[in-house]
Image (cartoon, rainbow, N blue to C red; front, side, top):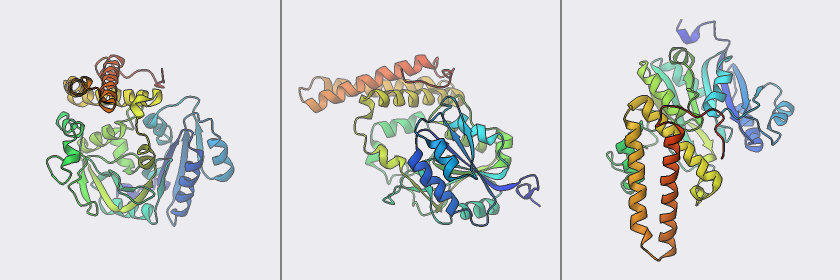
Length: 337
């Protein structure tokens, strides 16, 4: 009998969804879970981050078998998952975004693959949009150099290059399984025994970088992270973000970018020390070069680009102050201010 077959696990899967004002897509996500249960023993949790759109009432009325946790504040992604992880009894934990939907056999294949590969601590599948267009599904750990390749556009210019396309593995065949560094949190299956060894999500990451941090800790504990393309999950988050053309110029968009910067600095400080300062300087230098190049032009499009990058530089300075150089996470919940 392997540890994963231990009678101490009451379920095959503990499936967790975190919701924040996503009632309609949450309904669709839970419907996909119900279709894919098959013969698996599954317990399902919804952790609601203080939604005001009737999400909780919808789940209570339409999915009576789902256990709901209501938070009076927005806990963020990682800390909200931790609420359910504290009571989960599955030998595997599946994390599913509320805007992600399981495709046929996704859960069955996930469990079969994990059962066949006890060395794997966490794995993900092939994320696609509603149009079935591939989304980034298997990535390598962040580094200041990889950040440079992405931010300068070199990664996008040479996607088939193993050197330039390393971060998102754009050079790789998406239909081939592979060992990777981390997979996006829209869908992942995690071995419960691995979580017992490394702990749950670090609550310092309110939003962004939390799954990267968890994958790094799981790898350091001796497990592998795998990408399995036959596990297919539709994720509409990637589609909706493509519709936002000037996100960083809106108030809400600017705050989300500031949160991304905070988490980047926290991640680099935690795992790379001086890397936090290097990441900050990389972004500031690139923003200032773009401002310099575009600010002397009278062309409206270039003036707009200069203004946008001035704003990004300002947000990075704020994020550095917010986190004391990546050393301290601001109190939760992070707020729009």
